Length: 443
Image 1: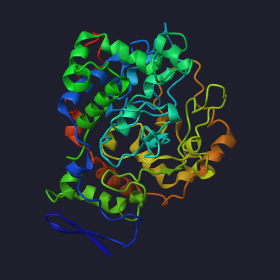
Image 2: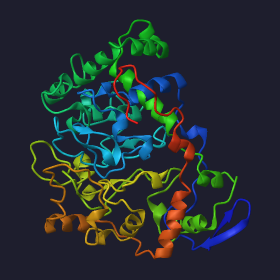
Image 3: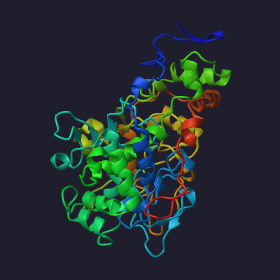
Image 4: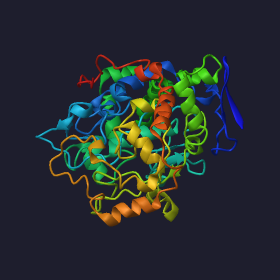
């Protein structure tokens, strides 16, 4: 038997040795686990993160789908990006500029993305650190990827500006979406260059960039990578999360309440959660097929007509990666629902029950779990309405640990709640009163 001790009160419980792969508790989080952040750069990034100037039609900011009010997500299963009005579950279709479709995947939380161990991002891992590339990154742009991104996070934050459904706008609506449609992304006259020119034309931004980056003060034009580096610095500072009750427990500063300790024992023991949700941020950064219900438009190229989202296989081409998606970090997880790569579950109890028995998840799925703002004409259930498509997802699912009792779910939820960090949830800089473009700030 393995003994778990509370740092102050002694023995709390025992666990069967080897009950779960990676079952040992992670080490406490330290400053060395994070990239350094320049405060002035982060303050500039704060303004850019909340400024719709980065979107093609000047109507959508990063914060539209990643807002602190909703745990750095937006509180819905699949977002309405370009063509929506409002925030979170209250966001509705703009009748004068309706979206063509929902964003295909759930808006993930942004906590701890400045930690050094995050070397792969997006639900399918389509960008990752790769020292063999000139840019140091592997991305969908391949060899056309610009150089100068300070981190993987910096590169990741700037792909949404290229998506017509997220921020760029629909074909021919603006100069950004037109450049994207023609394949002009990097270089002079590319989409990123056009966005940079917009920002540089605003005197308040020009002054701030000169104050933060010596090369710009010396006369170099503002580059797109400067914008993305500033946004990343803001995210790294704002949503660093290492002061939760669980962190205090790992540092020996306090014990957890008995229900949370019971959940900790299950999580790192017989429930097997730590087999994938391992390490200090509760993720192995790997990809797993967990039988999650597929809803929405799917992930397809414009010439494709299916609504399927096959996950990691679209990046690697390996059959074993079909329907596999990245293991998310669980920091502040109770604040980031709906859960799953399509946000299929709005109730954590139902999500945990499904996760324990992945092959049965779709057959038992209650569609009322989805939080989908009305979008006329959306065929949200094409995959689940097709028995063959649904069966393929279920057949690919990894084995689960077996059904959970109601008491076990209660305990796991108590433990997951101990990962909530009020300081990170509230943020350090907060929502700015205004942005230099003068455009409206999402609140």
